View 1 (cartoon, rainbow, N blue to C red):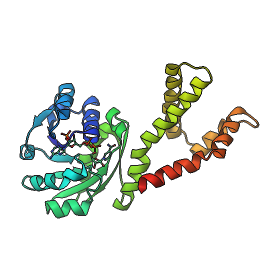
View 2 (spheres, rainbow, N blue to C red):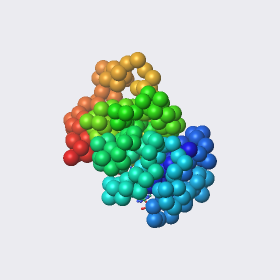
View 3 (cartoon, rainbow, N blue to C red):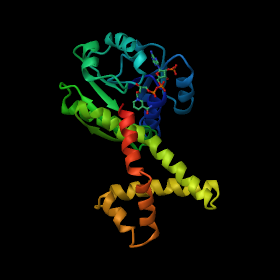
View 4 (tube, protein in one colour):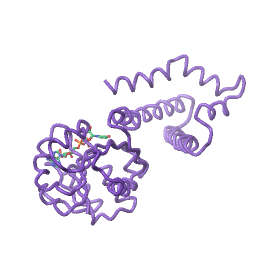
Length: 254
Ligand SMILES: NC(=O)c1ccc[n+]([C@@H]2O[C@H](COP(=O)([O-])OP(=O)(O)OC[C@H]3O[C@@H](n4cnc5c(N)ncnc54)[C@H](OP(=O)(O)O)[C@@H]3O)[C@@H](O)[C@H]2O)c1
């Protein structure tokens, strides 16, 4: 059995990704907040809902998906039942040392999923406390594997990895919207423009992942001398596209 505390944007996305990709909903217990968000999700997915953290006692792994403001009160409640469990917190400021300090001798991890976990295509960075064994890591990987990729990184890199993989779905959404606007400006209807832009993003990402060439070489392959694509690439550079992306990451990092 696995447990969740909090089922908002990211908790709900991970639970949805798990269930939609074959993880048994009967093996999931969720302690939600005060709103009806968890109930609405439960209506779709059919996991077990509970009212108290204590009722997660029979779980082996607990994911914490509450915001920073609720973290410490959740950890205080969790301490009573945490012994022997693996605790994974998605909360932004839940450092491994903070979790250890609050929970004592319990194996803890800090993970930053992104929203594509919802469709099994997520990218989650994770840092484990030093007492995690290889078998413990395999257990977490076997669960998170239903939601996409899981990559272990040193905690110092978790924040920037979370920005590059976690804030960027919104950046890509802006790019897709802009590309579709351009299509409409040049005569496509809106639906076709969105279908083309989204289909392109999925296909180009798949090609970049599967190809032996890096993305720079893939770009070189489709830019013929004096052709339309290189003129478009030059315009992107002229208007600071590359720098805008780097500045967006700088801004997100704060
Ligand atoms: N969104 C992302 O893409 C993302 C990605 C990685 C990490 N994170 C981090 O994950 C954390 C949560 O983000 P979010 O976007 O999912 O926030 P969110 O949508 O506000 O969800 C938080 C959920 O926690 C619930 N909650 C609050 N106190 C609780 C308690 N005592 N017991 C059980 N549930 C409780 C809330 O319930 P109510 O609905 O009743 O308020 C809410 O549904 C943040 O620290 C964020 O930085 C987010």
